[in-house]
Structure formats: C-alpha cells, structure tokens
Image 1 (tube, rainbow, N blue to C red):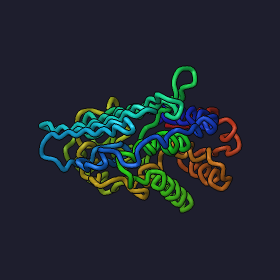
Image 2: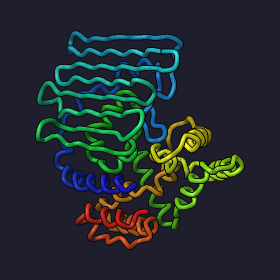
Image 3: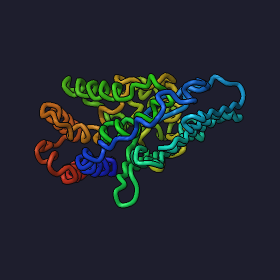
Image 4: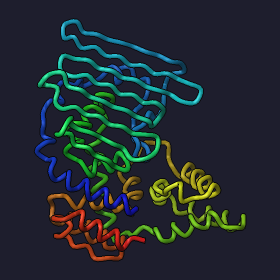
Length: 332
C-alpha cells in the first residue's frame, strides 16, 4: 500500500503537467468500426479492472483480412482457440498509422500504435500483464510520458486526458458501443457519493480475517473464510491487491477461491468498482487533482477517514508527493 500511495502521487504530478500534451490531435485517422468489431467473434470488456476478452462466440480458430485499394487501409483479425486460452490479434495499417492489439490470453494485453504521418498523432504503447500494474507510454524519446497504474480504472482516474485522447479512441474501434469515458465519470460520481455518505471500508477487519486464513486450526481458517465471503464484493479489491509474497499457500488458495466466488463474470459497473476502490488511497489521490474545489474537499476528507490522519487539501494540491509521504509515514 505504501508504494501504491507514493506511485499515485508521482502520477498526479505528471498528470498535472500533461494537459497540454494530451490535446494532440490525430485519433480521427482510426476507423469508427474495425474489422474486429464487424466480425463480433469475441466480446471486449473490463472485468476486475483488467481489459479482457470476456467471451468468444467461436468454436474454432478463425481469421479474416480486408483491404481497401482506394485508401490503402488494410486490416487483419484472428481468434485462436487453444485448449485453455483464447488469443486475439487485430492489426491495422493506413497511410497515417499502424496499430496492433494482441491479447495473449483473456487479460494479457499488448497494444501499440505508431504514426507514419503527421496526421497519425503520437505513438502509444500499453502493456497489461496477467498480474501487476498496467503501463502506458504516450510519445517517444525524451517527450515520452510513462504512466503506471494498478488497474485500468486507476489509469482512467489518474490520467483522464491522456486516456480520453489517445487510448479510448483505439479501444472504441474494437467495440464502438464502449462508453468508457461515461463509465469512468459514473465511477467517480459513485465514489464521491460513498465518501459523502461517510462510507469507510473495514480494512482493519479484513486484514485480521486474512491473517486468520492461516490459522493453525481448520475451524479457524474456515470461519475466517466464511466471514470474508460475507463481506461481499466490497472486499474483492482489497484481496486482489494483497502481495502474494506476504501470504502462505493456504491463504493464497483460500483468497483465490473467495475472489472467484464473489466476482461476477459480467463487466465492471461503476457501482461495483466504486465499492472496490472506496478504500484505495491511489484512487482518492487522483480525485484530489480535479479542478472542482468541492470534489477535492470530499476526497481529502475521505482520505483522512481512511488513514486516520488529517489531509491538508491545499498542501496536497500543491505538493502531492509530500502528502503521499505523510500518509505513508502513518500507514500500517
């Protein structure tokens, strides 16, 4: 948690400096509906904060290509069904841009966009490993902006302008009805409602129950597991962000089963994600960068409830890294 707080504050500094950079035009060169969207062989979505191939409508490997001689636009799309994993590739080549999207498994993603003309905008690369932070790089060389976030929703909250201009248009070519900016706005509104209601996640209780998952008696382990399940989806984000290195084999296996039982296989909703992120300090530090003074105040008050320490709203706006270090010093 300490490293996540410091990382989020670092991202806030970059976020405040990136507003002008994020306005770079060029995304209009992408098709409104890609070959991948036209074929509808797979469904793209966000589940537990990860960009994923949620389901496949094919029972075998398929591929398709298209080329428009009048424009020189070429597309390729393939879905390969293995014994346990579905992999997906989408490629686009135009006179302005080259784009590749590769899912090597349901939630292991590499996305790269390279402009080949002035109209192509700026380079973008996104890497989402099966586990760990998502990394997005916008631009290249000394001008490259490197973003790192714990989940897709963290990325959208911490870098709204960059995502809106450079990432979301690419994702919408794969799925034109994907209202990611709208979902993010609803997520932030849901988080603020929880904060205004004084919602405080029971992280201390969850931490103790996780410790009891390694209890010396079977009865103690089962009791802790039942209580964690009873917490519902609000506990999922906390459990998935635990460092596996801090857990023994019994704890890791029981947590895996708890998360599997609680997670719906439908896409993330703003209300569900808000419950997961209500205790996430990185998310609230991101919200403290908003222009609206009332929003910043609500975020600061909620951070104070989470940490048990007063948060200097003005100081956090001007010196987010210093604020994060202060929170870190008071972290458990």
